[in-house]
Amino acid sequence: RYFALRDLFLLGGDAAGKGLAGLLLAWAGLDLAWSFPILSSAFLFCCALALFMARKDYLPVFQGMADKKTLEKKEGRSFFKDWRGRMRAAFASRPLRVFGAVHVLTGLYAAAAGDYALPMGMALGVNLESMLFFGAGITLLNAFLGLLCARFATGRSYRSIYLLDLAIDALPALLFAFAESGELFLVAYSITRLKDSFAPISFAYLHDCFEEGNGLLYLGVLASVENGCGLVFPALGGWLFDRSPRLLFFLGCIGVVLAFLLASRLLPGKREKY
Image 1 (cartoon, rainbow, N blue to C red):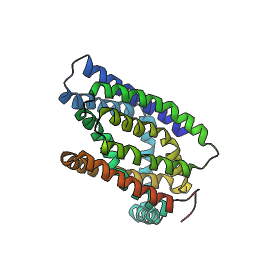
Image 2: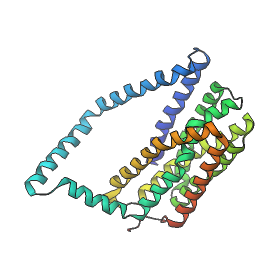
Image 3: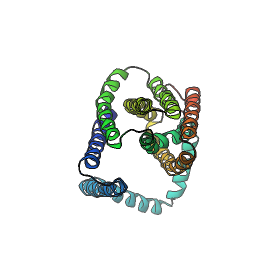
Image 4: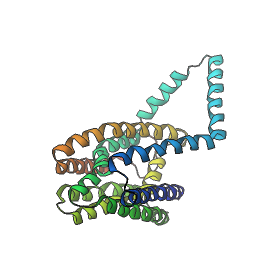
């Protein structure tokens, strides 16, 4: 439920942003070519504001890290040796390796749906402003569906819901690949966005697969893998999209299916030690 409450604010803000972008494009006449760099610059302001407001929380953390490093020097220990040992233990964890592989296998479809669905919709004749308003409505709905899914998942298998979350992506990927009308595109777009309501349960399952003491380290490693995919796959997706949007989404579908098969075969049903 904690993750669902977090997503309530996260998705609510996302919905507000999409709605505002639609208003600026439709009524304010903001040029599309300039809208992305101008509006994206607001993110830097939000980051600076968040750092300033949370300074009382993170400054003691940095001070504690400095004190720990000083203590390690006095005791003759090496920070890098300790870090290297923890990383070796992390990569010895089978769930970590599997989740990392899932991130890689689903990375192409994530880039396709996130970065190239809207250009594809515009090519099929769907109005950009309409897509932004439509996406804002679905995102806002997801914010509340996540809470309902979290309540439903209480006492049930998080693993099953995580696998369902993975498997559903194959359907919109195929619909995107064979979409030749705006209506079919909107159906695929709706499915891939509404499926995000499973995200809090999937994240909770991922967290439960790791031991308490190493959870943050493992999540940090996975975040690095995801960020690496966020650099590679959008560029690869753009190259494929220029040649064939159908090929892009079809390859994304194959990656999703392989990720589902791998996860269903190797991931545990509850927290275990490996």
